[in-house]
Image 1 (cartoon, rainbow, N blue to C red):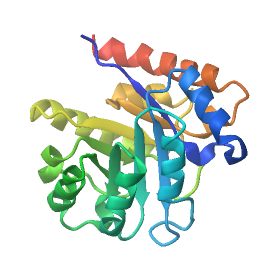
Image 2: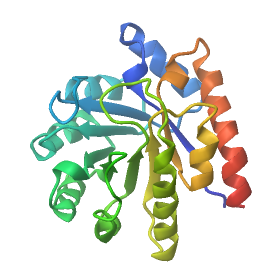
Image 3: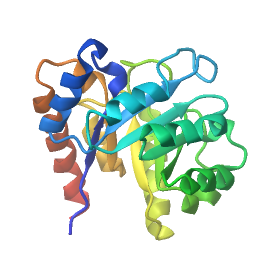
Image 4: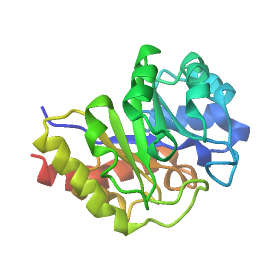
Length: 228
């Protein structure tokens, strides 16, 4: 059975005045899940939303929800996001010195665990701990703001993660977030990304279902050429 590219629209770019409608359009478009960027104004220079928004979105859809915690002290808030309905909780390696411990804490709450690294962060520090995580998120922009340009220098890091996954026979998913649109999505899929997060490319259009379909088409054309 072929692996399937997963498209996760990022609600950071959604119109929060019409959140119910925006989520419904993602469902119609075949989105595989929704990505929620949580920012605290400390780890990143912006503030977005907290667990209450995750809880509100949970009431709108049965789609899997990922809470991407771009915050300085994620351990303090894991339980809140678990209760709110996140299915997978992603923390940043830059603020978590004990990755196996926090992965275990997330899983004890009955959730899947993800680890993210910023564009300038080496993958090497995460490699010894890959088996503890269900997902590895490689940021292709500097986190904190939507609509940034894609950082192509991260592509070798995606390739390296895919290589390690194959060599070590691990089953974590490789996710990419930042500057993903119809022009860049094929490049990350070719590098080995499996879960693709897109914000402006989805919610910046009038046709949200059509945008999701186009992104999937562009990614799968490349992905299935190298993963027959």
